[in-house]
Amino acid sequence: MRQFTLYENRGNNRINYPYFIDIQNDLLSQLDSRIVLPLVELANFRDKFPANLCPKVRVDGEVFIILTHQLTTVPIKSLTHPAGSLVEYRNTIISALDFLITGI
Image (cartoon, rainbow, N blue to C red; front, side):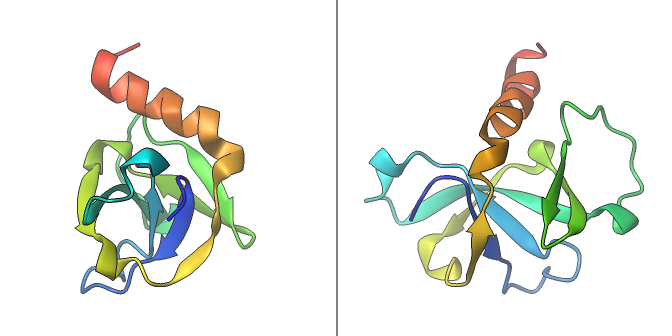
């Protein structure tokens, strides 16, 4: 499992959150869970949060919002359908996490 891999959400909440980004460092791959951030389609995003907390990303030409404030963990066994990589958004994702934790 690679950090910043995008996975299809195959759980019951997949309609609301179709993807997860694995943000956990690869050095911790022996753990049986991964830290992820959910994505929501821009068209379904009604809340108002700062862009630096909930940045936009493109997946297959569609715009999604990363819900950094909904950081969670999932079992590795639920991350079975990789859908690409968001490594090009690495700095944006780390900045959103920094804003969530430090407010800066």
